[in-house]
Length: 115
Length: 113
Image 1 (cartoon, rainbow over the protein chains, first blue to last red):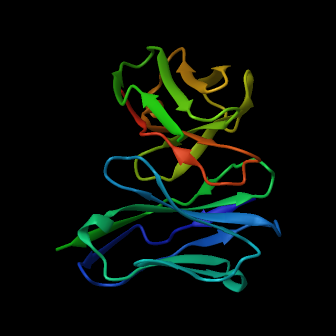
Image 2: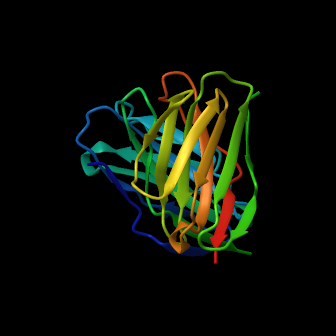
């Protein structure tokens, strides 16, 4: 069975600090997809990134970066120079390659960035 | 461009009352549609998904049901709400073969008293 674990329930940082959100997954599939979503206070989930299991290249998008390591089944998310607007709940998710998207979500990490 | 809308945004209902949450997608055809629920302090749980009109798959046994009367309309219903049905309900869609990202609606917050 697939499972996503986000062990950090809540993280508090001060603006401009770097912060890493951890995500560990379990799957028996060789082909799968990993996602990160952001849920601001408004509630709507905002897609951040999708990564397939054959692409282990790390990715950087502005202040965001992602570290995918199959050897440790981890897909960690780092925010550099955090800002107050980064305050949100962040979800990691996993989907197997069924041709149909059924995401299994972690329980989320609440990030609080104070000025 | 594609958009997804849910309504109502908030709902307070007594135990035993019926429920109807609606979701509509615009700007795309034959989307895969999903209902997720987010309970307080927990992750998102997939409730139902649909690959086409009238085709509904249930992930979790419960007193909720879903219907897809039109290609871009997805409805979540209950005949009698329970306290445990309280939560934040999110509709989502994806297109193509379904390996792309899910796009979520604004969510509907249900409180059952």
